Length: 114
Length: 111
Image (cartoon, rainbow over all chains, first blue to last red; front, side, top):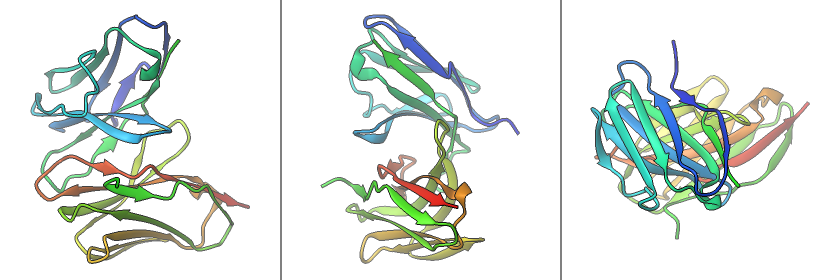
């Protein structure tokens, strides 16, 4: 079975550029989560969607970050403009919904902002 | 105080040792408790999932939850070099899909 697919796996770009991270959830899953992982702060939830609708975006650090889920099989996380402090590993996860369903993670996008 | 506290280690043990990993938490609303394993440059992989207090065993792995002490543990018996990874505890309240993670404990099992 295909798991959560993220692209690109690595991204290196200069400060001020727009960055777009992509995620394809597991087929049939209706909840999608975006996380950021850093050494200092660990794994933090940024935003999550249920049935393509954003439910909680309280973890989004600032207005430079935005996320969309135009359909059940695709989501994007965009940073514009990017800053060096945005450098981190960004993970996408999906679940089949419901309070007792586990989340399954992709292998992440390693983002470096120079 | 952070919602979830986890000793980052690192923890280094010889092959065959019993490993104990722990997390404490402060939010009494947490009801679902998980352990994820994360290999280098990979995403977290669900290892154990328990609801409320008690023990759950799966092969060499045992998860324990003590809600009265707000303390959860993961035990690994007969540890193997392939168990070398970072172990993250995670938990969520009963009415929520939001997971709160510990920072992870880096484990190395030496052959």
